[in-house]
Length: 504
Image (cartoon, rainbow, N blue to C red; front, side):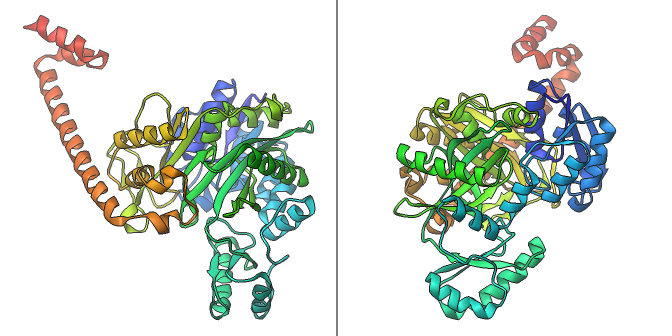
């Protein structure tokens, strides 16, 4: 195992990796920008290095500065987390050429799966089902009509180097096609530096189901079951669960075999996720491979009992996966709701501000992964995620109720959040029945119901804040009257009460 690892990230994933390092006896080095100087991941790390201003391109995306920080602190390896440089093959190569270990897949695998057109070709060669579509990018928009006619409408225009819904357009007839191709090319160029787009068949009302895979340097490749990721807004996941409500043991075996073949086709190593679309006939098609740890990895951990970050460290340091495929068991059900600083009533527009009051929920089966604390600011510079809330239970119905209970106890003031939306999902009949797809938000999201819920939520939050101010004022007055009480206040109210009685 490594002696020291640098985490090239921030927020909750940096905190998650730091904690795994500490439990493995590994010293953790954090990096931070100007605005993250007092961030939680900086406080928890053994060492921290300043790498630049708030603008990500000059700090968390500055690969050479990150490597300098690793060498300066004597780190042996770099864990990229997710986002930022985690799927940048050039950075992975730079890490390895600098004599450091990259805690992730080989650069060649990142590069192969980073191009959706190349990934489709590799998957077809490996016998993994792919959605019907073009074999390469569209060089001339004038070629698009003939290609779309061959595939059959509706078609989906996708950026070859894209992700997160950018450079993506659904086209239902030829009249819309030319303008949609041009718009997708412009968006792709702005977002990814490449205007290459391609066409594939648009699957109506699909499920988005992904498989966690892991591979080591000893010839072992396994999958750790599936995650359902169909609840999305703007093509980005907001609720995930493990296992999927529609995946049978037979489907799991077939899809898991496809995921393992996909990983082996590119010489994969470490953690990765193979994403599939599942149509209404429950046939699965390769969508893409994320060559990193996923945001939603905790639901897999809760159900399998495998610490995926610790396993990343173990495999990157040369260890073998310590279990066989047939030894892995899935127990119970886990749901994750991402808590964003966003206005659910206004198209999920990001909200900025200071977290004036923050109290996450607790209780049996509840886990909260966060990188912020009360008093921190949610800024325009980075992703507006506050935390990930995970609920585990022996079965799906209980997990839904437990998540709803936990969300009802979550208290945040200072910014608007997606907590009310999470409660809306948990109380939605289609979600509870497992009868949903990637169009859930468009089909089921009722702004009227959510607005009523959010108004009630804000009244509760205002009352809680008022009561807190009242309590703090009262405690302050009592402390002024009896200074001795202040010294025992943190030990519990019963001690403070006893001291007050003694002073009378």
